[in-house]
Length: 538
Image (cartoon, rainbow, N blue to C red):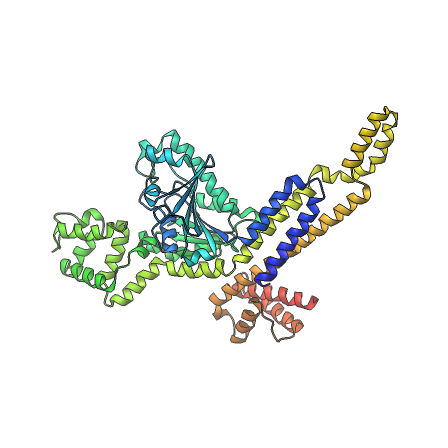
């Protein structure tokens, strides 16, 4: 299915459904919803960034966008729903559209955005009045494909930000409850999601993702990517990625280790040489360096042993990192890599790998942007299916045939009424109760629509399955022969193969039976069987 084919087919389905709705009693209830779906089909995909409070969502948004516009800090900062869209604001000084709960809007500055940071009384009073902030950026290629949403987050705890006397106010809890619900709603309605784990997945993460999964109709591996943020705090967590991926395989396509903090400040070669030389000279004995790098307190200790760097110089080193909002753990990681480095260029590339943002950008581009029409189509068709099911399972629809069969009896029973009353009642019956033939035609039409929607969903599901399997076989290329790999790449990328479908079906059936259970090879063989089976039906 190509983009034009998908979009056209879905738009035709929406038109056909609207045509049916317009001639029924469902017009008032669903016509606006159908028009909204038609608009959604044309709009960019919505990519939500979600996760626990202080998981590093805003750091990640800034790193993805390449600008410092989302608020970041060591305390809870994103207290509003922040939406990043392609567009040109009327003023560079006021590039942010603030939408209030009472409906009025105003353009505000970056300084105003910064004033919303934290949980002090003034910030709480301001954010309590705000529905969302929309930030327009005109020259960002990422926003050509998606609208990016930075959500407030889930799972805040009392006193978590070190300001327990302030965070315990009723105002905070009321606001937090609203923002947690905003995060859930936005994640549920988004076309795709990037979910941040704060170093280690917790029960809160599991419950949240399980609620979004919705039996396979919500956020799944088709439209979800996990990010293990802040790996600079504990690099050993990278070794657990495969375990985490297995644990969340229904919800997320993969989980990527990142450190937006490291990404934000990777020193230049010149800076790296300078810092390494300073550390080498200042800690000529390795034991002294290891003692110093153990904690920020130790690094700044006046009587730090085996140290030839003054306290003021050590403070100056840390201040240069603090100016970039970098935590001690990020500095310690960079300092340790440079101290033991024999090749600065190689070390900087390694640090970029720890940052992981470019890898994540590439994955997002492949997994979301190239498939934006598929993701949006999936969501629109799922919403359309919900409308059709709402009609089918409505009591009045279920009983419509019974009402139609009673129509003549109702009219007959009116004969004993006075003439004027009889005429009014009979007209009401005729205008509000359709004939049995009309009811049956309506039912046939809506079940026909239901069948078309389900067929479209099956085609979208197959296209998504092909994409995910293509990505998996590329990562597990060693499990296939060159001929098998070339065939599967062609098959899963939507290209026709030259082989005989019946013979290829038999071949992949045998591969499926001989493969290790739950291996990529077995899953690839299963999908190949399915696709060749479909070709044999044509």
